[in-house]
Length: 463
Image (cartoon, rainbow, N blue to C red; front, side, top):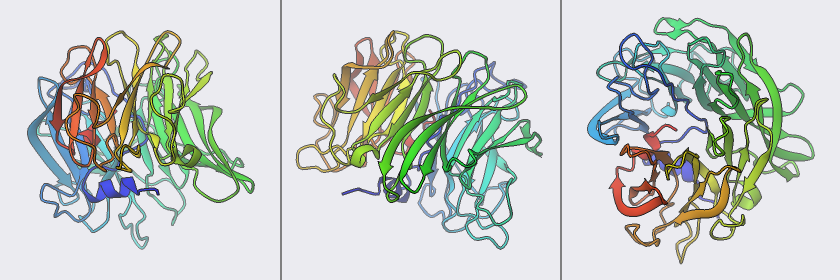
């Protein structure tokens, strides 16, 4: 059986996640200079957490953003903020099933030292068009997010303005943060400057005409060393003989974007079924060669057993690729239908050796009598790239992990972030009955000092 996991999460106010990588802008902090962290919404130098929510009391109609502000010790604090379409200065109105904030990305668009948050509202009515969808930039400030500016829809009248995914980055290297979004199965790139008075730059439409390619998700980050953000577009390929999912590399450029090669992620013969990626994606340097490597989860692969693809970066863009499943040497367990290995992925250096490591969620892992107990894998980076050798596995029955086996989708969301600032990234794991954080160490992730965390915190952690 397949559980509608993402729908269940949204219903319980745990965020529906974006597939795209949220590029973190590193620059001098504070006033009149870009924010050090794209998700530092109040400019205090600490990363914040922005989760989709129906409000502290669950009474909101159309959804909103619950911000938990970060603290000096690197973790989430107790101060929160809720902002929705009923908040002052935010376009639109709080209406049932708007899903305002279900898809999110962050960047300091106006370079004022405060991170801004761009959100979708896919159920928003626009004129006579029902559920046409809108995209809004919420502006950061000393007190957090406030006010908003609508991103104009670029496309034919009547065509859906829903944003299936969002990504940010400086794609042309001019110092302004740009916005990429998926609308109507195409990718639109809005060039900065993006300010409170509107979107000033040109819009580029990325579409593989004639290839039967339908954009579904985005990953942004730096793959080569030219300093410009690159874009990976995930899309369905539909023909009369098969359906498939491809990754399409688009190189950033000073005057234009440069569409490049594609990589087949999965293929299913026949013209029925589903091909969409549905998982997470991230760009990180797993082999420490200075080039960004692209990690993409395809949890639908082989009857939802799941697979993760690594597309290694090089001077000319991504080149060699590798595939990981639960059948890969060194990776614990065996592939089983509906494990959904790769539904969530996140990267960070968990052992402090300078190589980025990859956490992989398998929320459908059956353990004991629990069909959706769930589990998490950690694969380590090395000079030769990501490897299954010495990989780690965590589930509720792992020694040191609190709690017992339950049907709770442990690992539904995984995020890797060094919140205690010891130089080793920590592993955050969401679960329906108790989320937790496991700390990084020189030997990898350790269960020593495992701590519970608010379940809404983890979906609010941008990559």
